[in-house]
Image (cartoon, rainbow, N blue to C red; front, side, top):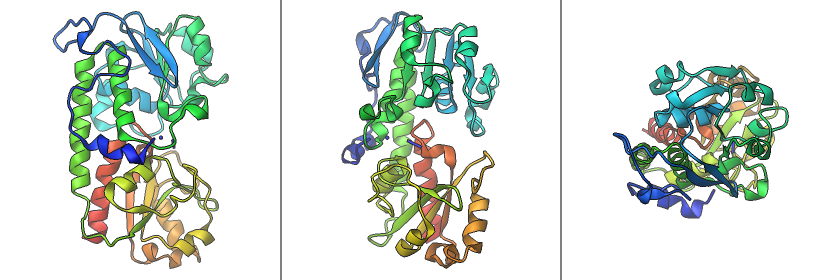
Length: 338
């Protein structure tokens, strides 16, 4: 669960092909290969830190699933020395490529385990991957001559993490990684496809929703529910599709909620994150069962009217799955109000 500016949201909807990756050589960089792959190095900025690669990496490690799926979407399985921390089944379109990549650890690999595969590039969308007890800080890897990239949505220094999620930031990250690996044209193609899908999903959102229709995004937990506040991807998706996040007044991306306050606000629709990790109230069905049985939540209008929208839990973080969240949410609203 993680971020950037609703004021800049609508720039994400523009179908602008061929965006240059931030801080890279762009269109003037030397190219080679059928897809315009670049054979020279690149420089990108990651959470305020310059990440320099002398040449496109050949032995990279993706430290968690979001990073892995972005690399696989760019056709980089053959450049990967390892992956780790799979939280959900890999996207079906990427499953065959994923099967070719060595899995280094069930969760984060240790510094020693990561070092053992002799990586020439590390990538994570989560700062926790670079903790001392995980792969180790990026600064340490830099001293070893291994560049390490971290998503802008979860910087080590929270002050460098934007306050709100923008789709443009997701797309910029994909193009950064494409630039690092010298496959800018692949990056442009992936981003163009995502932009087109995003436009279509927003256009399919029901237009006859009543003004002020509010939605609660329910991530996990039963005794203490975690819900979406302001600044995370659900907040952004709500604004894009013209509904209100029922808890957008809470200046925290994933605050702890309480059922009494939720009952007072009585949201029109409840979005259920379907998580596969097996914890308390993780699956969508477990959430429905709880909401229907609990004396407080069973009286909620959305529960009584069965106004639920189910989305993959993994899609609630900024990643290559983020556009899929808009598609699933838009389609779910159409079913609820169809």
